[in-house]
Amino acid sequence: MKRIVVLSDMQIPLHDKKAIKAVVRFVKDYEPDELFCVGDEADCLAPARWSKGYAAEHSNLQRDLDETTRIMGEFREALGDYPFHLMRSNHGDRIQRYIERDAPALATLRDLKYEKLLGYRDLEITYHNKLWNFAPGWVMGHGDEGPTSRYSGGTAMSLAKKIGMSVVCGHTHKLGYLHENKSFNGKYVSSLYGFEVGNMMDLKQATYLKGGSANWQTAFGLLYIHNGKVTPVPVPIMNNSFVVEGKVYKW
Image (cartoon, one colour):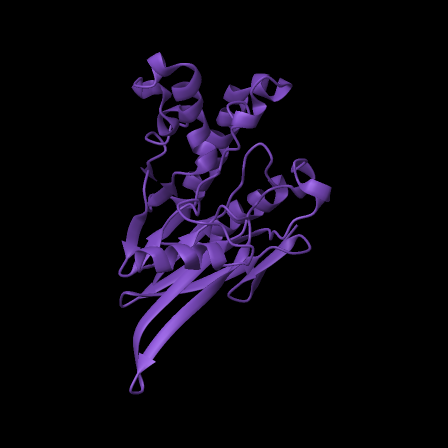
């Protein structure tokens, strides 16, 4: 049985510090076989297109990236030598798009690539810049590779139907999964899952939310893989606590 922890959108420095500290502790205790992150681990506010010409464009990007590297380093230390995989995402793409739009002469510089700026090679974090097939019939994406649904799990399922493989992703900040199974003559002939793993943001920091409300869920995910079969398990974080396999983590 392979056990995988899937980290959700943190958007550092807008992250839920206490929740992330608890999940780091959980990873160390749980000793998973692998650790995934669906992306948007860094917010990258300064190069966002709607920051152009506003004070936000002058926010301290280096400080925010340093904080992201520090936290990802904590996850690496908690994980030990096991594989750590991270997916590209729209927030991470902001830096490259900003360069391509406003400083195209710098676009080919290797040291300005997102994964280089975050020091992921030194942390031995494998960075994936496209959908990644991690198990038979399953891929990890960020979630922005297809249309967005208002329903939890709907964005992942829409992408799953598009590519014909089950999907685990983030981007929507929602938690949940949908499945579609087809059978014929009493036998299952196909199965698709769309699994979204929530977010680990501090909602008070998400000042861009209209009316201050959103259909979001603080959470992360688990994947159990046995004999090539993947079982997705959502782990909601509620009232400063979460439960995995009967053990409570509380702060």
